[in-house]
Image (cartoon, rainbow, N blue to C red; front, side):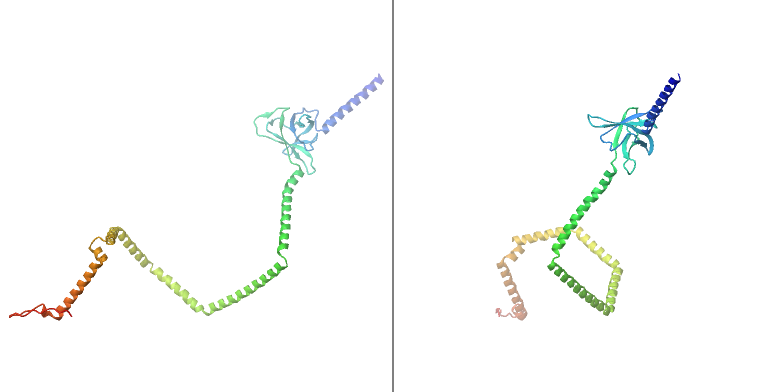
Length: 318
């Protein structure tokens, strides 16, 4: 009996050790055997080094651990089993995102709670995503700088080639001559400014007088502003009167008369266009002038008062 008792004790101790070993291993994995596990699932194309026992975090607080990772040999997807013991309900649009927990690249799962009013049940598959690794983030930041640096180096190299090609011996000599010419130009400008300053200084009183005269003119214009306004008002009144008068009708009549004269109708048009009529009229006026002159010179030829009568005198043209 004592022998059986020893074997029983030994077996009982071995059984307890085995139970403690299993419990310890599960505890190290983050599985509490004395607590009911609330398992959810998430499917990833790449877990980027996530391991069994990695922590599941919610706002930086640990709410569970990864209990298992299985590979689907058909589509090569990875199913991750998530034991979440600290939450009773999870919205069905929540996302399990694989993130970096430290600079060493330790992976974990960050649960991003959704806002859906429908909650997932135990054993449901949650949405999944993966955060870029630290190397990917560094590459994303460094790659544009690298490309820009390469472009800048290429541009600088091209610029140096152009400068080396342009600044040859002849060009350097021309550039030196141009600089010397600029120095001479600046010296001439300096002398010119000195002369201008001297002229202005010598004629300071005249310049002051001119400015005074200009100021006087502007003052007079300002004082005569009312007169200028009256003149402009009178001109405006005259233009309004002309606009309201029958000047358009007068101009039309003048145009009509001018057309009649040009067409040759009417006495005035004949007088202007008929040379014979003009010559006869000139001859008649000439003879009339001679007749008046003769009447003034010899009035007795035309007016003769005689009681006894007398003889008529004939007219002799000089």
